[in-house]
Length: 127
Image: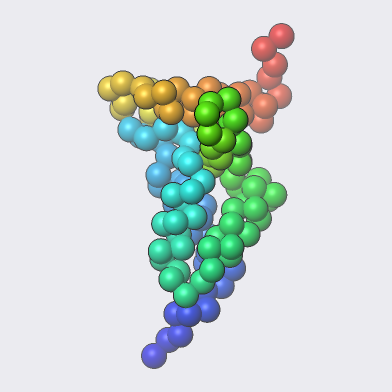
């Protein structure tokens, strides 16, 4: 009988990155709100505190696997996560354009943030 109560940091880290990878692009925006990532990954590890998931998100952003962007332009501050690779992020933007029949306000915001991130990663300026 294996003990599932002690998930390794690597397992949680891989789950976080995998969740973001799987739930962005296609008919979904290229970025995802942070809260559902924390909730869903925490659901997979019910004996772990959500702070371990947040620590994995911090580690993934510091290692360059994920980008974490906070948008405070609306009524509520929202934090988004995405894959922090220009080719992958560009592919997710393209997939969303191709598969989404209409873009929501959130989708448009995610596209804007993701496009700016691709430009930043590639060292491109609007000037």
